[in-house]
Image (cartoon, rainbow, N blue to C red; front, side, top):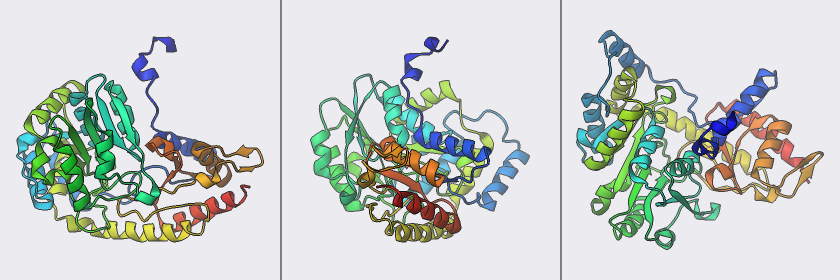
Length: 398
């Protein structure tokens, strides 16, 4: 019966972050004490004022089909947030609200990428970018980076990869999985390259905007010369700990927003009405309300770095955002312990899951097979225990 599946689904790779989380859950169900550092989800609860807005929405009967691009009042609130926080001028006609930033990304890719179009992905890239491009029958073009370069591309790097068929660039800042943050000057140099090709577009994924330890968040669309070539993707999942509410959005030129609305109209019709009103409360709030969460993540980052530095064969940088470490672990390739032989990042992840009972994600899922992604979105006690287990297991390899 499997032969009746479409080639599209047969060729689609499973999300390795979700796969590792599933494996760890299965082990937990068998009574094994597994620590999962694989999923990108804040361990904080949604703030009470947002939950109250959702309750009020129910009482106010926001329970009918919404407009496909989202309630006008929410889109106006997002436009005001973009002006307030990012100095970006957009109207509600430029905003499309979707069922999570993942759908926002997919809407844009399906709206813009034709078969054979090339899409540049600076690596490491978020795990779903490549799959989205392939679903649209585009051609992913990966720009490799390294820990020594802070996992960021330069303008010169980008220039080398732009060709006649290049249609789109997708990147994130702060970056999942590396935690790297592009400065205003770095973005300005990249913008200067982009403006030279007026049929080149960029998806700037800024979902981790509020988890930024470097200071002011910088949006690529701030550069007027390329504003009409930039689609900004954001949402409330990470910054307001609202992963389960499933609200993301884009800010884009109106013709792109209309195209995404058309796509969305045939897929989901629109995002949850109750979640939209909760998101409105979030984007209208002063961003300072989530500073305590950001500060806690920074404390955990510093703790994790201190613990990681005790592992001699891990090479890392200092991530300035998000809640991940992305160490280069290639020095462990070729080592072995008992029945385990470590030839690559996937082998190492499997070894740590079986030997240390700690779940992390192989870097190959993000286009960087020499690395691992370790989430620190959990308590300090759990992080200490996880890193102790990892170190003990790695010390056995020879």
